[in-house]
Length: 576
Image (cartoon, rainbow, N blue to C red):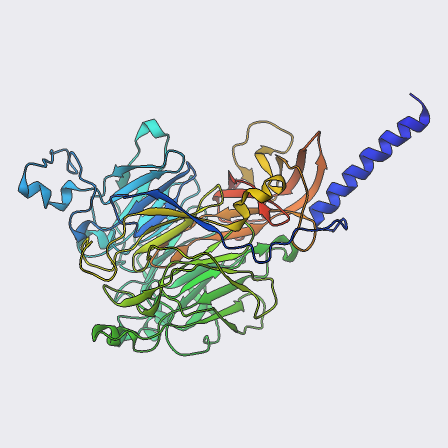
């Protein structure tokens, strides 16, 4: 081989490596990008005629199943069981069994690939409860409505399909009754904080650090309580800051709590405007994606929608007041705190806010008038909104394709690993009611398919994503700050604004009543990237620096090529 030929091969390989390194850093190569303006309508996919159980609560597991459950005290569901909890048979010929709620499922597991549900046992009532995932992927579920359910702690450990896993109940109860409480996984390994509840102004931890540990009084919950509107501070918005402290928003106010010292260390300014944001006013909140470029230290919270002052009283008289249009964004780290306000296209409440792999926020489900509670809302919000947090103020919202199915009180939504958004539930009534009402109980299951899944972007979509430990070998979880490798295939490189590839890690939420508890998106650092052969690309990523930034557990890794995401794969971040 001549010297000139060897030099040419060396030069070519070097330039290819530099090209991919620049892509990793987000530097444009000057090629023409893709324009997506006016193409973000999305579409709707019908999945099941009936899940049998209203999806009041919803959670995606790392086994690619979705747990949905309702309340045991709401009477019979539409999923009749062969046996009651405890083993006694249920008969369709027995009039007593047909009306006995213990002969019906109140929780199901939905298999994403097979598009099927199977019933799960629930012993105590989880009505309007809360949930968080532990580091091993177990769903920790706390509290609920009347009776024994209010202090109960339940676990669901996902398993292989043929193992038929089910709910288990802890022998240890909560200290206080937790109905309409919120939970957040903390940076301490598998330690969860449970905040608030109806006429409960405390917080506590699961598990307890000592045998005698009880709950802790939180005066902030007394101060934000509106006794004439059933609280308006229930289901408080909780977000874990990257310094390990806990942001708590209730009604219109917010604080920063140090959960290790049980001390409020900061009080934030009140969000502007009238009305309330928390249950039963039921706005929603999201922690905007944390970015490695700021060392994950810029932590920004967004709160949208809610109900007008007096909405609950008016709904009781048959008058439904228009909800709130306003959204507020505030950086909770640093020393300067101010709510930056903007407006949605229409008022909204009872809605979900989900972070998409593109880092945009999807606002979906809900209503425009009234508040939460049985038959307290009108005018379903049928059009989802897409919110781009990086656009210029006034241009951030896009209206997406409308659905024909109302999703109001007791509806839920969650992002799936393939990029779709699963939508279920909706029951504005105390029982399952299907006739002679404005908004019947909704058991149909559907998915919203965002624009980025359109076939026209197929060549830009990264595929065949695999995750490996750095140096190869089987992966048992990635230790904080360590490097790991993501391999994928891509045909073309394209971009909305500039040509770059981004990598994200997403913690799916536990969703109920418009809350997406523990939802978290991290934009990871790419240290180097190179083309292996053909269309194959290898990228070396850096895991989050600490559990403050990313509590230990399972996350979805996604490669986003110029705004077009891959299907996501599961990874576990853990301690050494």
